Length: 218
Image (cartoon, rainbow, N blue to C red; front, side, top):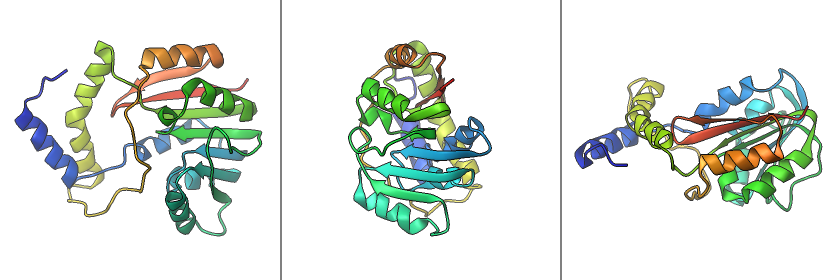
């Protein structure tokens, strides 16, 4: 769906470069609102440089962040206080995940790198009774609603970047992230599979090319 002219798109790209911001970190506070004020063990899948894991550590007895990239894990360890109840390890979310249960499992912008059904099955197995699973993911645009949200996000993206940077051009590099790839599942398909696996799961399309999934293991 191409509605904006190439010239407008180039102008928006320049604004994005001048006022960068982290789309995934944008949802961290929202994730915390889905969780109890205090909980025991938490697992952050695809933890990157550890921003979300450190936030979880303010509420959890213990947080484990796992990521496949040793370079990113080393950076997360460097940025984390030795006194924080947060640890990071190099691991594959499908084969090397530590034994549960966990009261909280989070996964931000990582599940589209994994086989979706197997990943949710693994998360469900690791989640303690009464625990919470929160996923922020990417899906392939397919419907008119998908394209409309994407279109709305194009001008909002630099506008929010300008606000987050308080109108100042930001020389700061964004957090280190693993190489990304395009999502291959549509929101409709992943919602259908999630609803089959996780009774009562809540999914919602979001701005900035994201969706959210919340499930409480009643």
